[in-house]
Amino acid sequence: MPDPGALSPPGPRLARLWRLGFGLLGLAALTLQFGLMLSNADGAPLSRSLINFFSYFTILTNLLIAFALLAPAIDARGVLGRWMAGEGVRAAVTMYAVVVGLTYHLLLARVWSPEGWWWLADTLLHTAMPLAMLVDWLLFTPKGRLRWLDAVKWLLFPAVFGAWTLAHGALSGWYPYWFIDVGELGLERAAINFAGLLAVFLVLGLAVVAIDRVIGRKRTPVSGSAA
Image (cartoon, rainbow, N blue to C red):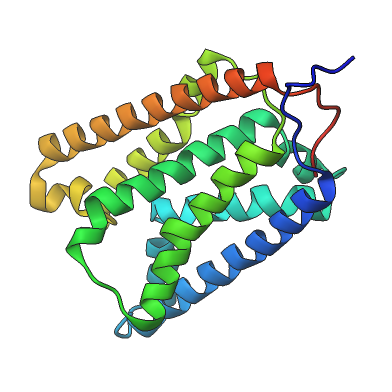
C-alpha cells in the first residue's frame, strides 16, 4: 500500500503539454537567435556563422533541452524518445541547463545589455528554457535511480566542448566567451577558468544526484516514463 506521505509526480498529460509547449518555444528561440546572428554577421560566410553559432555552450544545451522535451512528448516509444526519457539523460541535461543559467547571470549578463529581439532571445535561452528543464526534471522525471558516478560521467560533454573551443579558437582567433578567450587572457588563465567551470559542473551534478535520491525516497513508485 502506498505511503500517504509520499510524493506522487503529476500525470502524463500535463507532462506532455509542458514538454510540447516549452520544446517548441525552445526551437523558436534558437531560430530567432540564429536569425539575429545572421543579421549581425557583416557579410561573413554562412559556414562561419553556422560554426560559431554551434560553438556556444548555450546553443548546444538549448538544443539538448528542446530534444529532451520534444522527443518523449512526440514519440515516447521511439529510440530517441526512450533515450531522452531516461533518468540519467534528463538529469544531465538539467544540470547543463542550470549551468547555462548561472553562468550567464553571474558572469555574462554584466558585460552587455541586449534590447528588443536580442533581449527576447537572450531571456528565453538563458532563463526561460533552463527553468523549464529544471521544472520538468523536478516534476515529471522518475527519481531514485541515479548514482554518484553519474555526476562524473556528465563532465564528458563540457570537456569535449572545452577541447573544441580551444582547437577552434586556435585556428580562428574567435572564442565564444570572455572567460575562456585565450587571445585575451592567455592559455594558462583561460585553462584555470575552464577548470573552475568544470568543478562547478561536478558540484552541481552531485547536487542533482543528491536531490534525485531524496525525492526518490519520498515518491511513490513510478512505472515507465512520464511522457
